[in-house]
Image 1 (cartoon, one colour):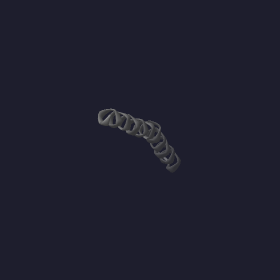
Image 2 (cartoon, one colour; image 1 turned 60 degrees about the vertical axis):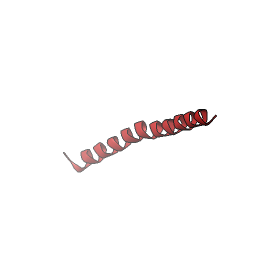
Image 3 (cartoon, helix red, strand yellow; image 1 turned 90 degrees about the horizontal axis):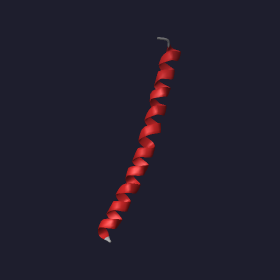
Length: 41
């Protein structure tokens, strides 16, 4: 594998990580905030 291939692989892994985990953490924090509010009320 060349340096270019490894660079593309690293970029692909970073992109996939951000595509899945960033929206998931935003959604989970929103869900936890809603559940906590419902519990307190």
